[in-house]
Length: 316
Image 1: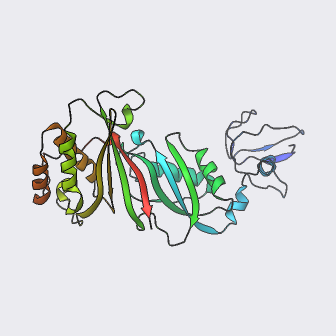
Image 2: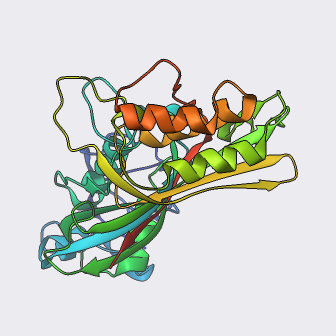
Image 3: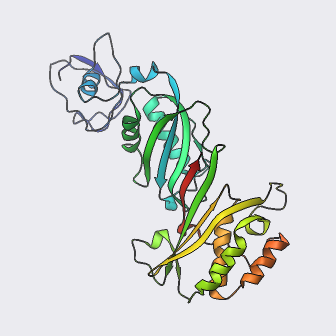
């Protein structure tokens, strides 16, 4: 493509050496400019299509003027992330949360601040395969292109798995009916590729005792003894755990927990209690006593975060 006068709105790596996204330049002589192989945003200037706008249209990529004139709709996205380098899902002052990174990318795409709402928070170091979030935005170019636009600007540790338009009253947290978490335990030393995503256990575990303790914890109970809530919080601590099972596959142990909702650090506390039973530091009967007492005790340890994954969020 050839142009005499263009305004470059966003540049990634142009061979001309221009890196200021707000720079205006005059092209005195007609010449071709290489187009970066990524999504860029362009505007029309002086009634003439810029080099970048024409390139976008040729590649069937969105132009910002189209986005700004689109109808605002609610979008539901499913994402996965490696939580190792993040302070958790939820935005917080002074931290690097997954929510912050996704919101920053959406702001680049839409040229306006966007707030996203997750199905729930995950702690620092906890991973996700199926975190759900929603947001409102004017995006007329369909789900596939939204996913591509998000993916090309996000770090490799965050992946947008799907996106779709939903009803205007959909809420990723309020309307969630059930969540599934999976905790991974390596029996012995893990290899370098799985070590960041599991907890290593070097002592023999009594799997029958762990299964018996899991049976104690399933069902509807007051789980105050298995949460990190402090004494000033008055949150209802009754929850119904519909699934808590243990599966062994070779040297890998997988603990799966499902409930309509979990308390703060509840899953990791349940896992910590089950591992303590496996090592012989607790018995299933003692777990029952702790549950009935409804008080946090030092006997219940919070399992490390790196083994935990938010696996799936369910909706009716």
